[in-house]
Image (cartoon, rainbow, N blue to C red; front, side, top):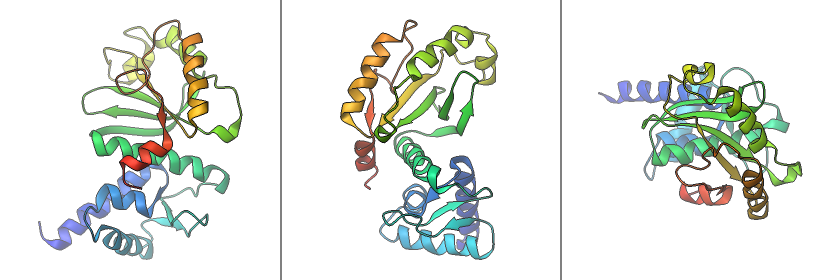
Length: 218
């Protein structure tokens, strides 16, 4: 593969991943697709090329602590942007450890809407939830997931058929930006998980947002 072919292939990768995540910062794209010391500079060059050729759109530094944010068609609102970028960091984090085969954001199941639906190469499905402490709302997701499980958790259900009939109901991956909030979420899971739905990647864990950012060297 020559340099032109390699650039074309990587440009397609950029467009595909931005489409899947709905919005991504320069830094997120660089970490995923442009490794190495000069990766950020090369990433900026390719993004400029794509933007100049109207293959991708961007919001210039929407917040003082956020670099340019790239999207394809629908521009995210500023009120939603920080949450979308945070969920994208979860995608970047998972991609550093696993091969992500499927990533779909804001999936509505009627009873609830998850921030993302994820499938890893190992064949495991996950519901992704990012919890922000500033919302100050009661964390009702364990109760809602229990209700979803009661209707769609059995083998052969419509939901599991859509997910290509996995052997188990998807696990639920929760990331929060507050350790104190994490304790409340764990207590909520203990109270509202009558079916023993799995939480976390393997063990029943709640993950801290700052910790996953450290893992991807932010």
